[in-house]
Structure formats: C-alpha cells, structure tokens
Image (tube, one colour):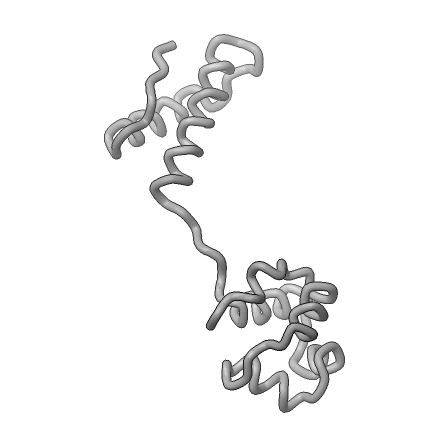
Length: 118
C-alpha cells in the first residue's frame, strides 16, 4: 500500500484507477484500509478542485415541486395568490422572508438556498 497526497490531475487519475481496482476490498483488510484512505483523499481533492455551488432558489423550488408532484395552484395554497406564485417562478418578484419560511417548512428547501440573490 503506497498512499500519497493527491496534488494534481495525474495523481487524481491514478488514485481513481487504483480505487477502481480495489473497490470490492473487504473492510478491515490491508486493501480495505487502502480503499478507505484513498476515498478520503479523493473526496478532499474533489471538494477543493470541483466545488458544487448552491442551486438557484427558483430552480430549487421548481425541482422540489416536481419531486412532490405539486402544481402552481398547490404552491399558491402555501404562499398566497396564484399570480404571486407565477411572478416568483418567473423571477419577476422576489421571495419575502415569510415566503422563505413557508417554503422551508413545506418543501423542506434549506433557507441557505432560498435566501440567495437571483
């Protein structure tokens, strides 16, 4: 087992190739330990070099509505008038603090996502 920091793309590709080779290693074995350490190093490298930003608040609302099988009229029951929902989903109106709270409670979208500028 030769473990080294992942410092560049070549190291990253080598680590991914090795991970693929030992992916089915038994936990607690030498290869299993190597797998665990290698996955931590890969995760750290990916988080530093390929960060994933937060989604757009309105896109998050639309996505969650789709997941829950909701229509605009269903969201209007949560937030108020149907025309207001339409304006929000088309980004013509900003979310208010009260709307953010209701969306967080009803759709379980994190407030950190909903309070972003759009």
